[in-house]
Amino acid sequence: MIEINIVASFMQSDYAKAFLGKTDPLWFSGFNQHIVRALKDMYYSAQPISVNALFKIFPQQAYELSQIYSAISSDKSIESDLLILEFEYKKKQLMNDLMQIDEKKSLAEIQSVLSESLEKSRISVLDRSFTITQVSGEVLDRIADAVNRGDNLQGISTGWKYLDKFMGGYHKGNLIIVGGRPGMGKSALGLSLAVDCCKWAKVLFYTIEMSKEELAQRYISYFSNIENYKIRNASITLAQIEDMSNTMYSMDKDFHIIDSTNRHIDHISAQIRLHKVKYGLNIAIIDYLQLIDGNAKSRYEIVSEASKRLKQLAKELGITVIALAQLKREEKASDKPSLSDLKESGQLEQDADVVLFPFRPSYYLEDKPEIELDAELIIAKNRHGQCGSIPMAFEGKFTRYKEIL
Image (cartoon, rainbow, N blue to C red):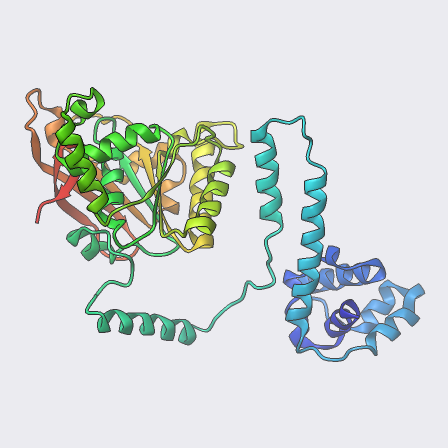
């Protein structure tokens, strides 16, 4: 009965016809499927949609068309009726895909099939438009809440004063690219960003380059002010270990780590989705883009694919994705990185809402200072405001970046 009401609505109601663009004929059975396919052809070719036009296409089924045409009950339930059909169809397709999985395939291949099946099963009928007044009203409500809290940020605080000033915090649906040349400490910057915002946000650090133990060693050095090499070599006392444990468990700063050996973008996306379901998630940091595998052949195409997928993932999950990226080596040591350095990395500049470049002039000195006070964080692209440069200090022995206030 639902199918009949939908098809009859398409024939008669201008309101219902507007849903033809997001309707799949495969959701319907028997003759109804053929009718909807014909209606969609009319819709996309801008032909008038009428029962008379259908009579010409299906002259042998004139009686059936008449019966359907007269069966309409209401066009007001068209969206909910389509939702029921799409849900049932995609549920059936997903179950069929699961039943056809070849157990002889590798785990990675099975995960890829599952990821593709889940993507196909996503409900599309609920995609809708909103009036600018409606959305603007909701934005004003959020701003009013921030004002009442005495907080001028609409996003989640980065924990860094000047970065908040330029970006307005971390925003849902945003992709932030942190591009670093070899030796600039992009992983150290990623860790610093994670530590300094996890007090206010649920953070996931997805490390492809390092193991979780290596990242933990850097984290211990970060908060304990003990050189990283001493922690790696166990050149510390039991008293220092006790102090570090007490400090770590008393801090209100914690975040999750994943160090999967599966680098495929399908697997990474699935892991992040699952993590949000299990633990909640605001910010996902991925270290780093050029190590991700994909379905394309060339490295350029794989990075482009990963960039698109991560941007889509940020929008779909309502999170901020921070992807670290390796830049090409500089022509001259004194050259600061620029957006042109991303050109060899696919379409990162196009997909990114914000592009950040850590830059350390002292890295090129033979005698480096222990604390590099001339470092900076270059904001090369910013869809939310102006670009600029934030003065930073880099403490290599503790693998951390800090703002200079």
